[in-house]
Image (tube, rainbow, N blue to C red; front, top):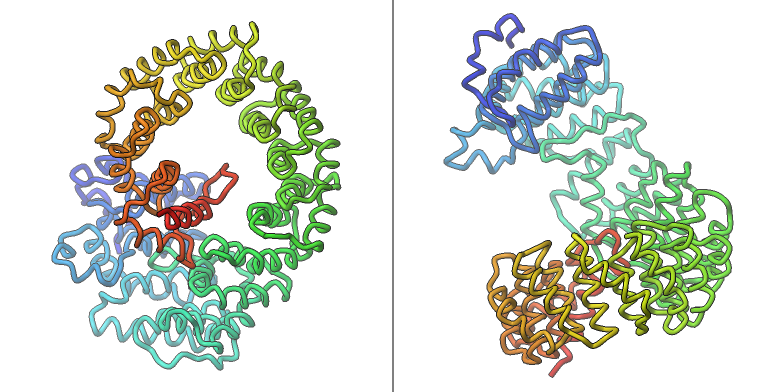
Length: 621
């Protein structure tokens, strides 16, 4: 270890960190030894951000290690933080050390320095504070694969003493993890400590892989039901905390995860661990929504604060529309929450609307919510008059942002009654509240009045490229005159104003009348950006009516990614399934795991769309 008095012996100006020359590192290390908590907090924060930045270490990182080790021993109350910084700096995969580039890398230099000072950090394993002992174990784990034989034996002896005699079960469990990574067998499934049994079962599941043996699942369910009471669930090398690592392991085996989540929820859902695990199952696996929603329904009474309750209701609302027929108990529970004046009413009302329960309509008429109105419009288009009245009132009251966009989107499925909202749409366009959505809906309205024509002309002169494009399309829909739209899109595509793929995606209503734009569209079929290629292929087909140029571009992009899903939907609209895509389509259609993640602000889960469009393309002859 090195004291602050030795800082000037290091040529910091010749070393670098995330933000350039490491000239500030010595002052930050000196600041660690100041008595002022704010100063120390800022120094720790800065060190976490410069000598270790988003998983990367630098030439200044290894020279800082002896000074950080000294601070870890001598700065009161900061020992655990500084030990975790050392463990984080040394984080690496054991396989990394076999690379020919390893000896020359900054991580190897950090590990060499940490191995050198580790004997002086071992007393932290018996510190009186449990967070310090747990952090010290993570320092040992970070370099356990690199210790020389004589030091390894000493370290394992010290860790073994901790495992055998520490008064805190969580520390014993951590010590077991370190010993197991050093090759210790067998695992103590019969330990008197539930934390140790849980750690042993987790290690065994990690080694065996899914599906996990029943005896392991039983231990995980019973011994994992009550979380450790401490707030020091530090990550291990590899960036996982014990909690998140266990959740990840369980999620790989959905049957085991469902069994464990059910047990944890029955035991009181402490820390919302069971409901969180249930949520992860739906994020990773298809067709598990009925079982998961049953678990979340059972978890609702166990939520101990409003935030947890709102979160659980949000998750229910996210998935409930995938149930063919949501059960009465679920709907009644949602209705009970939705009709209160509590903070839980909003997510419950949205979930109730998505469950297609008509009682959501009566509640919406009394207490409107934009997203719930949108869901109700999809579920109950026959209630167009009542819902349009609600939408008009909310837009007139000044709804903005996502709320205004959701309200305007709710008009589309309502048919003729939606035309009653024309005055509010005109005002939204005039005041630039959700203006793009308002312009689009006015175009779908089908009625060109003097007032509508005026606001569309004004929007067509906007500096907002997206608004100009939307206004141009709306004008074409209402008048059939393509000249202003062609002029607008020629300008947008020629000058590359705004995201090109957004503009290409709006050309569909123009169809073949957009033929004069083909010289601008065709070069984009080979653009570097994949979204531009995908939308250019779509536009080419809309304009020409021929799939010959579009289909090969779309087929190359098709697959389980956001742009790949867009390409698949475009191929389905064309009605062509390239033969070479069929194996990938079968994978998209039949995979039990989700191939696409959830997307914020999207009504439908993209993976559900992926599966549906894959099925559709497979059925095309």
